[in-house]
Image (cartoon, rainbow, N blue to C red; front, side):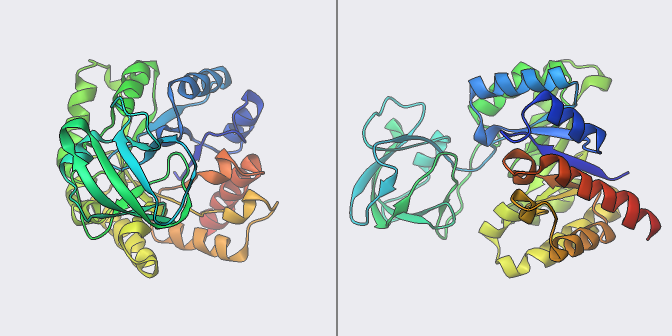
Length: 333
């Protein structure tokens, strides 16, 4: 059976739309915690329950993201700003981030790229005990909430869950979550820790959510076989993975991950730009249909419609296209 996983957002967040998407073949409805807060999470879960559709959580995970912006959203080259933990008391102009352990691992001179390098800053000073750093803007640009931050030429160790992830899991794990999509899974140890967290809730086997590990980093790729052998499924996030490896190598990496999962017997889903043109168009492109064929023909267990379902113009039609492709093309292939 092939699955169609959808991300819930403004375009799909009403009972009628969710129920139509479900009747057209959507099998899971995912709340992206990287684009949520406690209020929106509560609202989303209430609508999903009212629609009587299965819902899941996609964690923020071990990825640096902007959680707070104070002052201007446009950073000017040559200017300075504060970078601080959202748990700290800082209120000066700058950005708050979601992982306080970041500050003990960076050094003066480190270069940070925000949202695929749209904005670039260099660290001028660090106070790890106060979870604060001062930085200089090297490349101007707009900053937006929830955008990812990468450290040029340097890897740091981040907690596999954020505090908000743990809050969300604790609040809804006993409400019948279908899956937990673990973002930036880096090792089997991450899976062990998540299983231990789920064990602490003493859930019945029938109500325990699936663990779907997202492969979107170089270290996740290196530890793929161990991760895939200890989870209920793998999700290839081609977008975030392209931050870590050349975009020209994404098709090769996707095929390699699918091959490993097929050999182990672990279901594997694929996300990012599946039906991007249907964000605004009523029909997919020929290239997107070819992409679907290649993914399913290579062993994909399902497809993730992210922006297409969350903020696109045609969430129901997007589900219909994938479902018709599965039931038509792949059933006769």
